[in-house]
Image 1: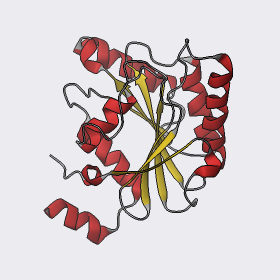
Image 2: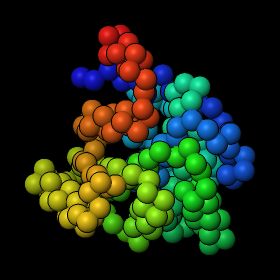
Image 3: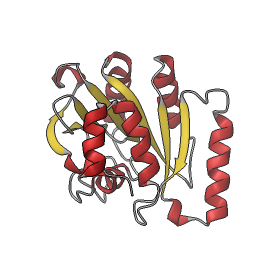
Image 4: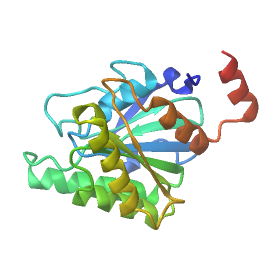
Length: 210
């Protein structure tokens, strides 16, 4: 098992809009996805901290951008879930504007983890998120969540379908299966994050030996 540098993540702040975020320096990786894609569960699974990101039985409840610090320069960013039908139209439009604004202007954003329920991938808003990121040459790693909800063969076929959909952008878009419930896919996710965060070599070595 890889050493997990994300187990030391701690809550930094919440922001209702991009202008309230910390200084645009260092490295940020954003987690985004539809309101029922299991984003909070994935963050908690990655860090091993059960209540780091609050899960809710009501999708779309979290409207804030939540930031978690890894060190003085590196942050995990939990973007508001999108696409929940019961949210008021104006609220939904505000969220989408915030998401677009964040992806368009945040210079320290070095990667986007996009979560899709593996039973319902490639929804319109998911593809829009990919387009926003790719337009800025920001790499996207797609987590096909809840892989435990379908058979292994179905899950593998879904991953192949999504990879084929983005086959013309292999240098920017990668895909993996993930299950928070069974804790499957954590190591692959950690490897992607480690590359994006550019941990110093001596720091990476010390993390491996702890």
